[in-house]
Image (cartoon, rainbow, N blue to C red):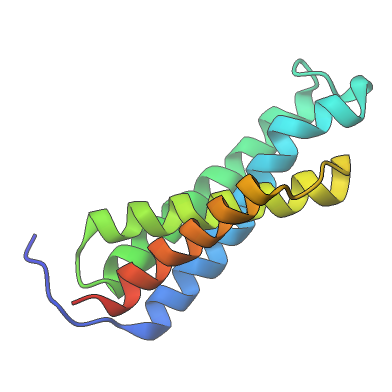
Length: 121
């Protein structure tokens, strides 16, 4: 696959939105068991949720790779960074775990990775 150095913004945005929702769902799937013990890992709902989450992750990958002109690396870094941001926000909101200076620094680094992917040619 040839990599084109042109960003297709609509695909990048769509991929980012799909990634956000996929990461949000994955966070819920993995971590709500600690907030609500009756939703233990054996609860069948997590397995049902895996089907739409897989679809979201696949479409997010498709759109982001298209948006970055075929760059699989750019997609990976974008998905990872969005996941870090979603994880930090949900962990703080749902578990009331504070955003420490270390976590804030990591969020800023994740934002820096996204900006690097978008603006560094």
